[in-house]
Length: 164
Image 1 (cartoon, rainbow, N blue to C red):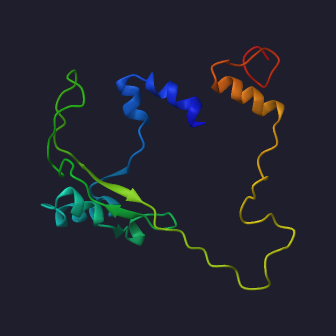
Image 2: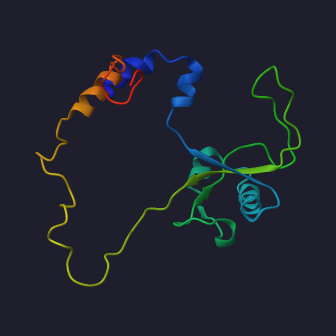
């Protein structure tokens, strides 16, 4: 797959390449909400830390601040402080003033699921790992998808592409 994607990645515009990058997941929450207030406090406590120190800070989101399982891990990052202003993302826009959103980097904690109590797993269940010959079986749909990835597009009468 990398062999197919790499030539296309080099052709991306600078803006498209920036959007296509892999990086942190940022979370923004309004001040005055439980999550926004926790993120604001975390940012205040972390003020003055350098990037390396900030990256080691991880705080579990308070239960009343989120409604997902597993709990989120919050890491502060250098951003516009609450009430602060910043330059606009485009010269055609006015400055952003009076920031009312707290922000953090979000991570998920490692998932450790205990085995359920009881007898050993069903022997008819698939193995927990793939063997050397457990590759997907080639199919017509796989070939159509590969052709589309390689720039061939959909051909009339194949798959559910245009003209069908």
